[in-house]
Amino acid sequence: MKLFSEKSTLDTILNGLFKTYFERVPDVKKITNAMIKKGWVSSQEDIINDHVAFRTLGVKNLGIASFEKIFLAHGYQKKEFYSFEAKKLNAYWYAPPTENQPRIFISELRVEELSKEAQDIIYKYTENITTDPVDLLDLNTPKQVVEFFEKPLWKLPTLSDYNTLLNESEYAAWVLYNRYYLNHYTISVHELPNGYDRLEKFNEFLVALGIKLNDAGGVIKISKDGLLLQSSSVAEMITARFEGNDSQEIAGSYVEFAERKVLSEFSGLDPKLISSKHRRDGFETANADKIFESTFIKQTKKEA
Image 1 (cartoon, rainbow, N blue to C red):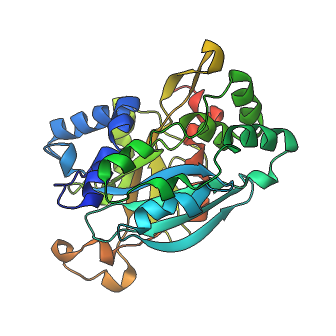
Image 2 (image 1 turned 60 degrees about the horizontal axis):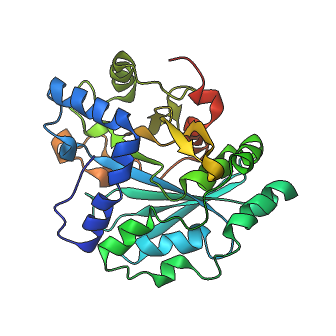
């Protein structure tokens, strides 16, 4: 993914939040090393990061209203709203202050729509959060912000509580254990060398590497206008330690791959002059709905 020269506080924050992600998602290094071997990039820093995504719980003092403050304070602009009815989720995306920085996608669980049993479990862990934790941060101190992404805002859950939530909302269970860990980063496939700058061809490369792809809604999720194509790996499984020293394999994070096609009004533009402003921007509800399932059991348990 595109790392930054850390000329700004935002660049330092963006770099910092990837540390744990790299450790938890070996597919990142596997894909990058193969791309280097192919000569498409010379290092991780050459890969353009389309967007990063975070998951949150929609409860008082948390959720989107809290989490977005980090990025709004550093020049991101709040854009379209998305609703995922079956998964009981809300989301917004945020445009970066400069073209070389990734979009941000933040979703939250509509906790009030869950069963009373599930709500009670979530409130049991979050009821002690009586103020917005982001308000306690100096957002201009990168170390504080980066540490916040991994800070245990609530106590370690029990395996029983995790599995109860898992049966009703796999998203809820994921957040209860993983908290604000980076959910995924996204390789901008259209920025790769000619021939592999199309998602269908890039996916062939991934499959040959042994990367398991999320096939919910099809391996390639295509927007209604046909201009945004997305695929994703299936989440890496991690050994989670729960309260009482119980353990279980659960879904961690994953990698996404996006191809943003050139808008029709710029179709005649010299390819050398095309930049992100000439391509399809934003997201698509139907695509994102299926990308969420990269951490779901139906995907993580299937054969490669």
